[in-house]
Length: 357
Image (tube, one colour):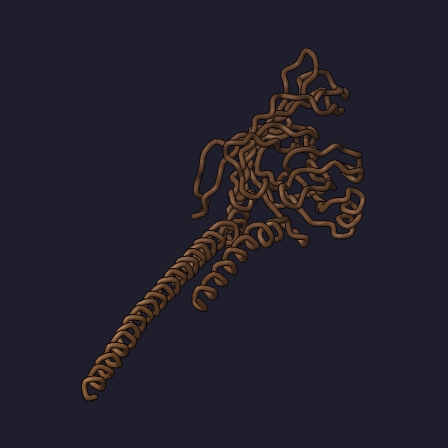
């Protein structure tokens, strides 16, 4: 019985531990870290663009650098205001062309600053009064710096586009290994959209000298490769086309590029998250499954031993009771024989005695 109790105790312990790992420990760890600090570099060696330095079309290498940092002070403020756990992200991004000397010169071709709150688990934007894009209040939506943990390839996500200041659908387009790490590939197509106007020299359109107010249009085919367990993007590619347009003139390319994350950036992403992905999967699936099976086995074995011991005890009791009953019957039979002979002996003795007289 003691063995059964020990087995049942171990079984209950393992089952409880499995549940704690899956439903307590995992949700605590499957969050964006509060010390988030990453740098991503995207390049294209053969881009076409409107060169602000020379005020005319140019071509060559462009570099886009993005820095993403968690703002701890604003995170506390936003979490308190919203009454939920969020993390506030500060993001700086610049795009610039590389000159003949392999250098970039200020100012950059394009630059933006962003501050926004996201859900710590899903990575989705959260509505908050402090959300800003280039210093202007902005209603962020959709995924921003990452996808949710446990990415669902059957789901269409909405992914934020900072150029247009809105989210667009992004759909699963297959699986692909990136440096030995399995990823989900998602694609997004942004239709041609006017997003600003700017003064440019009329000469770039073949028009007479003088400033022209041109509409600037933008379209983008964006592809991201996402590690499915963590939801972190391992690789990014953007096929972006921006044009400057004025009436009665042929559009001029302001940006024509297929920009991809550098190999160094991709390698660092894989190195940083390959182990984290495995650890989270063990904590979410394999460890609870193994402990659950061990717990269930120990529990069932304990119950089996307990039931078997119970049957053995009942059988032993029945056997002892049967033995007692047999002993009682034998005792009764012996008693009947003794007391049955005694009167006969006494009777015979009396007759003999009478015969003597």
